Length: 424
Image (cartoon, rainbow, N blue to C red; front, side, top):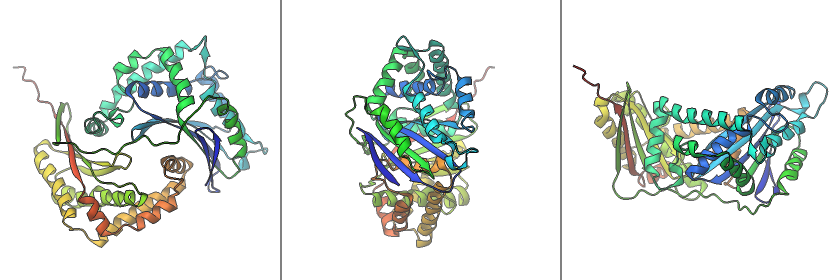
């Protein structure tokens, strides 16, 4: 891995790999979040990947990708603590494997630059057809989130837990916010993003990246940018009493989510300690929640813990029968108390460390997962997968117990079945 400066607030990260026949270029833009901005950037992403000035419709853009040995665009918008990550990328056949020795990585970079910098703007506005079509698509995506009940429950737990913090804003904002967006709003969001986001450009290839980075330099250098490389995320701290929320809906299976905060610490070793604790508590089949709450007590269909290291929190989410709500709640907290009191073995911790190390190793198996790792490590001083794996292997039983004893319950969310109306 080699990190180099491209322009103010723009850095390039070259990851050399001989494992793949494809190369990957991703442009990762980190920007602080507010609700209108989240919706605006979500709509902007759809518009920019729909067409460009050179390719004014999806058909011509798709044809250009096919002419690059079936290259593919990828990306999206996602939470990154209190920030949002707006991502644009292209995956293309590596130059070493083209039929006639063509250098197509530069052409792929040019197409990606066209997507980001040369959108289909007419008279100071995005093409109205493109704007209105993608606005409808985004509204449909927001409305569709309720159909995946597990994700919906987790999202609502985060919304309640992070109330008043940028991390509470849901994936694409709200329908109301999207409906209020004007064409001028998206043009302004595009300009603001290019000038104010911190940008990490990842190149994964067998070949050197200088020519690709030079092309991006031509576009970024002329911009008026004064951007600091700063992670704007703040750890969440539990305040006052535990929040209890309940929602009723037409569901066949109840969803119980418990949101916790804990003292995750500032060092990367402390983050590794927290990761092992969360995995021992609710990760694989060796975890406390799986072996006890799910298997021995049969209180849930699934019961898992997921870490949000950027916010210093984790959420336990479970699918249960509604009549088991209190038992499942008690069972989850009981297993937490077991770890706090030291009822945890070396074998349990080692099982977790092996599983996490295996997962980390698998990041090297695809350009997409390798790229995602180096996006996650943007603000971690270029930490490699191997660096973090070593930290995981350093975690001890006492480290896990110490982390457990800093855990505080913050939010309890339950999605239950709505009562059927009696029409008699």
